[in-house]
Image 1: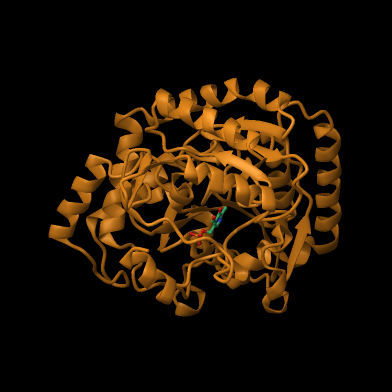
Image 2: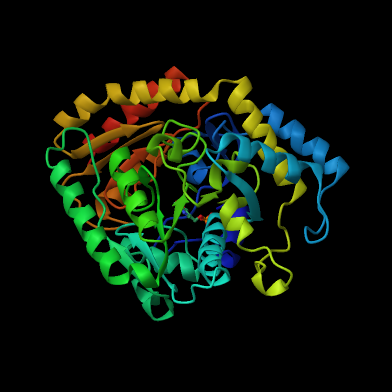
Length: 434
Ligand SMILES: Cc1ncc(COP(=O)(O)O)c(C=O)c1O
């Protein structure tokens, strides 16, 4: 065993890991483009973009250069009472690219925190406007919004956090209506879900601050896609009932549904948007919660009482902001969304074979995501088949990490056609090995 593994075994506590039984982690020594390299120099194709972050691939020269230059100029400064060009320019560029009047950017460090901020904004928005009775939230069944207390409460329908029920805040769950290639009952399920939302709004609409949605795609609960008119309708119904609408685009932002932001596909301007993961292209941890003008305006008065009492030490770190800004520029200069469209077209070519495969169910593709379930492998987060096929993939040079029974690919957008072909061949071979 290498020294690194030895020290890791003794001292590191890994996320979402049962240390008593899980295999040793892979020691990664470097990464380039769509590939990771381990201690022995073995290559692993990073087909899940390192937890969905590195949109342009690893070690992109422009991002590395930007980080280097920014580190020599200003590495950090407190963000209360101070500002700097990378934060101001990034806020401008995000506002310019987001639809409508989503113009006000609040910085945090990770996706869960961006969701906590969204909850506090929504709760306080109503109070600042004199409506003191809205302290609950609505979320979709199966949603995942992070693992801090508020975010866990919203994600209680994902089954990740049952143990922590006692710590959770008041959340009303409404059904979702996932869609996949060839499903024939989607209209019916959407109608049922909308009816359930209408009932929940009737009962709890006046005491609820906001509805939160992962638009177009629920990520961590198994890449469950939704149809745009359905998501739009839910959003409109919530707004009509006086709730704010929060889109958690931590996973869907930066091309993950084919558009830069999923809200563009939905055709709805939410009141608040959460972004992280692809924001810094996987280089540094950062998140933002972006609010529409009327939300921000509700916090303005001549007393601190209506201000948002929130802020983290590393808020708007200049290194992360500079890299995020360069990443946005790359979306333009490298025509990144065209690369995403190409990946989607390649994914779609796999759907027929997946439909015919005895171990694959509910195949689907959207943007750079290809997903399906392993048939006969019900369960959640970790299933026997999921873990076995994951081991096979790792041994065969592929970083594919099923979520329970759901196998998915979400490669960095720099992936080449050859690499994609390798990924598909391996994906099927791994399934055949089960
Ligand atoms: C939709 C969504 N929201 C929030 C989060 C939490 O982000 P983080 O892990 O950075 O706290 C995730 C993480 O997967 C996510 O997929």
